[in-house]
Image (cartoon, rainbow, N blue to C red; front, top):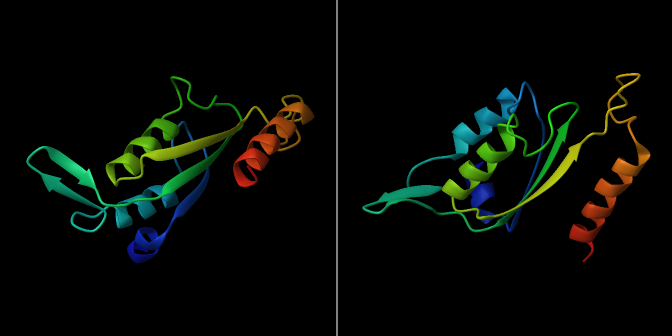
Length: 126
């Protein structure tokens, strides 16, 4: 996994917000790839990331607004990616997509879905 990550030009992470944070499987992946001398190193000035790629984070949420004070996943992912040297992180927030009346995720307001799709299209096809 570390070799794949080190060879990547672009990292795409997609995750829901679970209980204000990231799912356990994503946390386990981060714990496996965040390794001294492989993805970061310690110096006298502090840790230095060894990865050099761009990251796109597609984060979904039914109720927690992305980048709000109760969203602990987005700041954590920005921090840990930066810790490993990935400083260019683009967040695509897919919150507010739930139909509040029926509670069916991805059946929410069409305008919000269109907004998210346009953001993705601009990033993929500049």
